[in-house]
Length: 439
Image (cartoon, rainbow, N blue to C red):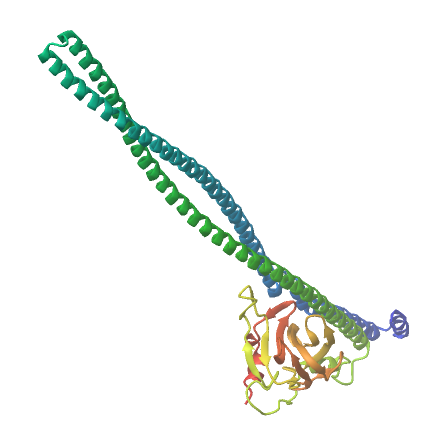
């Protein structure tokens, strides 16, 4: 190009009119360069704006999932701590039960000893009664003999008094011993009743502890079951989070490649326009058509929308999960729309654009990504079959593929709208609003 300009400059005449014409050419050339700079700034701005978006909704969803996982793990830790406290209480209750059982055994042993002592006292009392009766009879007999002897003067009064004193001493000793035995027997009965009262109280306390122990064992079982459920939930959330991270990484890498390719294409177009401007500075174009006119077809929506019920685009089906609906037990929000449709139902392009990806992707199945004007991207996932290929230009309503399996045994289509890496509610995009309510 520099060689062409050099030859052109050498061929220009050196007269004053020629120099004026040459000055005008330089002015046009400078203007073209200025236009080139402005064009590059305008073209690079959307890509930079998209790249500057550091908080995409998928990142927020993953952060939310991480937060939920951390909360579940915190609950798991709290439950384990509660289980340890319950186990400690169980140990304390069992220890108290064992102590009560020892006390009950000791009281029962004392009761048995008191029963034995009571039986021995009863036997002694039974043995004393004949002795006391015999002494009473002897005293009675001696008393009668002493009185009769005194009357008949066979014995003196001193002898009689001595005999009576001896008999009274025997009776007093026997009666005192019997009184002691009776008191001991009474004390034994009192002690036995006291021990039985204590025994009954200990039995009641033992039963209460047994009931408490049973309740705590039931509580421990319930806590173990809850811990198992929470641990399972932690595992599931971890697996779900891992799957989300893997899907995000794969999709983000693909979107980054698409954006990079778009930026490269924009730079290539800018360079072609700059070269064209430099060429036109010396050779004004004969027509208004530019070499990049074919790149503008993205904005020309073909009237390929087939008539039918609302929702024929992107698919004739029922929305079973709207954008922003809670998923994963409320831990996340849907970032696209999930349509239910019979297997192999055709799905179509929402707007004209260029297919920048048409292949399988882990977690998304057969996936189509179309780039539209103004930085919009549409994604169509879980197709059973694709009808387009990468690099193909499509019109609005072009059949892209057939619906496949979405969740479980259900079939349908997952549809998502992005602007850069950030998902948006499709209803905010006027193009989708128009075609999704097409009669």
